[in-house]
Image (tube, each protein chain N blue to C red):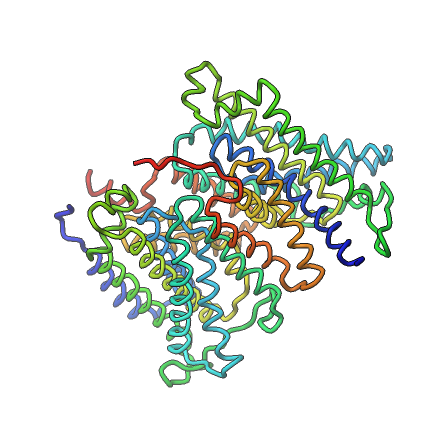
Length: 298
Length: 314
């Protein structure tokens, strides 16, 4: 019984982590039709920036509670610096190319950023563990969990609710939906599509960096975390249906629970289980769980 | 229709004879570099076929790795270290696996094709990193002792034999591909990329062609993987990781799909840059790759090979 509970808690915790990372990816795909491999590097950039900023904040003896704010600042910083740079500096010249070519373009950006990170931070791991234990812990049965995990779940829910609210209830959200449905028609109605793209990409980048910044206290930040994470985020986004917000949430929960069950009962099936779910979902529903029907074009 | 005679086959034959004759006089490192590049080129040759058909696989590491493991596990589990059997086993295993997976994949296009193939390769990766009998994430050493019954392990000409086997395999793969591309079914590839529906109207089966092309490319990836395992002497699950598959896509884009020679040229350039970059600037070489890729996508959509066409026209 207590193991089942542990599976559930670990699963939800992992799901919220997955959701925070995947939501930016699915947002960017939904609006811009770009499956952004560089999202993995934005995640890594967020983690590195958070680790060094929060690390120096704590070293200078500032209030430890303030380190949480520093984590958020790091995410925003990476988002507003890297997002516009990538979108304005490169991607905007690529719009209209094949989706698969755009994937390759972002793959190139991913490769560049991977080495950029190594140049800036070196290859030694960064550790930032203080914020993880700071909030204390709580007991479930005979297992102890850090409260930080709960906070992660809260952030994931907050992000999901905010985005859904923006999309459904605000003027900006309606504009976004118009652009998603028909970019040219939206432009004809006087919507500044390139501004919409710019803002979407920046927000998406910020969410990716936020995922990294919030993960930094839980892991050792080292080269390769971007590559590891982006393919997990791909799994979530593709399972949910590319571009679908509720899809990403459902897929994150599904993948999170499956993986946590695998880790608890059959640890050797850890990674295998995630991609098995991805393959099965794609086989049964070729475009993911929540996918829009598309008219066949001749 | 191209009226000028295609000289690919004669160039290939020249390269075969040239490499085989020059082999014994090459310094060890050059021989190794050429061997590894050719292994890579064989894989990229298959990627080229898929790209001509209009689909991009982000999971060919699956077959690269599977071929290497199919060849490498024969020795520890069955005591077989005969190179010919190892290669045949790699071809058989990757052929069968891809024939089954293609039943699913042939219905997918674009990003979904890329993602489903990515999922398959990551499944293999996930399995291998946790399989302690196969060395988990460290992999294991491959030993190939005999070729066609002759013991080569430890002999002074061991390197040259592996080199020669790779050269001949690459030649065979390229000639087969060239003949296939000229065949009736081979010519369908470009038509499918341009307009599937019309290909169907003409009475050809798109699904079957994609199936055949996929299996062909997978077998080439398996052969390349097995040869790479034999020449390097070590294999690990990293071969199935998505970044490996990404590299194959990268080299295919860099090379271009204009000729069967292009993948080998691209692989040679790629491996040369990589081996020097590892030596002199291990932390910036991916950056160089990324920049090159962007430049090629923006200014040279036909890949390096299209440069030759431009030269000839002017």
